[in-house]
Length: 364
Image (cartoon, rainbow, N blue to C red):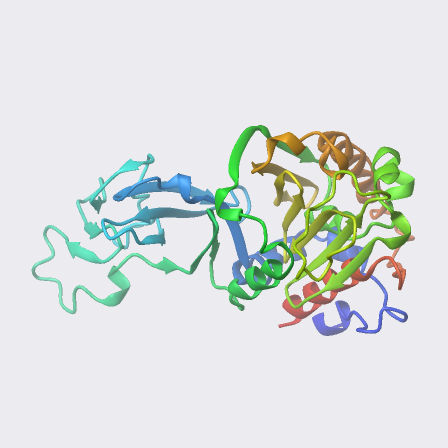
């Protein structure tokens, strides 16, 4: 069987079957997802506060335990923010070990020197090397996009993240996102004993809300809960039963007059941006292995007076309820008698969209 047959998702949701259970439980597929999906998409890495001033550097490992890609964010004297490989082009040593200030990037192993933008400058004992330096002796630069204070990078992306930013701006562009402030007290990490894609599957439908989230269901108007599908992201809109704890939308807004309690954006493959009247809760789903996932919650607040109310309240309780279900599904998928399921045409458009994107990327 070819991969194309293996991962075919019918574009017609009324006929389509879900991804096969093998997608979630085959260790070889889990490895293949690295190059087919994660290396070809984008990741949120934090905000501009990582490099708060000129000549700042911030090293990190992108998706540690999975991609494990060493990168360094730099901010030059000209105020340009870049993302570079943090691997010396001589022998592969990690270059920058600590965040801080640096006008030059110098490898502590053999003294190879680069400017803060990653351009090769000097190397001892290489006077007799022929055809040196070449362009590959510069540090590799990754594409980076800034949205408000938030930073996103692509490894070898097959699409421009600006498409996603523009789509989100259509709905939440009225919010002062550049003024959102990181709140460490509302930020937490969770470890889940389940495949990363199952967490996304669960997030991408409101179908389970009345069954799994009793308190949240009392706040949201389940009957009018809607999903909109775009190219590399989709949106779930949570409406409130009344007009308390909802967005104050401007008159020219597409949803003006509606009681919108939350905009839930999912971005392929593993990012969630949950906008509430108080700010945004960002969820990043990080694969560890085919049976373990870390989910990081990071909150940015711009109106503290609206915290702990409405749909953006009790986020940790909702998370625990989701984890319980997702871990059970992970166990269930190991059954020899479950192969694939079907989609609800009215409630699972987001999951269908996710499976379609996975199919397209895995078959490419």
